[in-house]
Image (cartoon, rainbow, N blue to C red):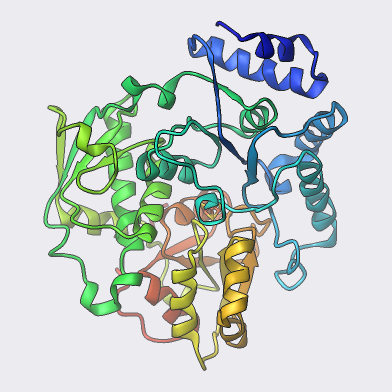
Length: 424
Ligand code: F3S
């Protein structure tokens, strides 16, 4: 791989041990993937923040980087942590865990990372431009950045995203190259609009579970096609930001996708047409995909969570509207980033929501928090959250439209629970 003089100096240790280590990581990655050179990147999104996943080994790596003089050179933000840094006691997090988690966040802060603690950095100030090269970890945000924004990033891991933040570089391979962004699998979705029950629930809150179910289905088709081809999807007439963020999280979880094109919706789709190899998806299959994640009856639910990926301010507005003057009867976590929560504070949504007994879990989520064993069944509108609730926390799942998740938390009748057997 060709390095510039400055990159070679980083590798030789002229900028200190942490920068050298960071360039070693990137050089090794670039060599494995056949990169010819490094690219300058405009921003980094760093994952591997929850102490629940990092453990002492991760803390040790971060300490070494700080001790070696590690400082970020580019705008760098952080993924969710294992707890809300302010509200952790109310959420039942142990003081011991809190102590370790605070050390992790402090180490990132000392390197100059903005401790936004969100998986939707694009809603919290880290919004790249079309065609911009970036180095992001967090699979849902990677998919959103590539497909919806048209920025360019591989699915970085925690160490490689931090390495990119410290050096301002990433190896030029994968999603940074035009040829890797070409679609390889056509997906025709039939009768999507006709089957959208927008009139029942209200457009702003009706899409997320459908897009989650669709992402799961297409993700599984990608896996069976082998080699994880970039899907080109036609037949979706419109999508909101919230629908797309749900879709990205699901497609990345079930298909390992870093990129897709959606005809008429994503910015690079116009450069391509439907690939010769294609599959057709009927809306009945999408319904079946939705049903497959319902493994519990609503009465079994003892934990309710919205905000995977982290909520937009519009979604919080919707929750405040639905909870206004009511009281929840189940543990209900609302997960979002600190900047979005601060907007909610200012407008008054936080007061309305907290008066209902629901709790904000800011800068964390139902997956990265250490809650295994605390609950039996979780209700959510997120296909990604269902996957990890089952795989990581051993919860049963109830997968509902956004508004019905709130209804369940309130103890109201659910309109649309598909009664099925467990998916596990
Ligand atoms: Fe974000 Fe946690 Fe879901 S990191 S995408 S809310 S699993």
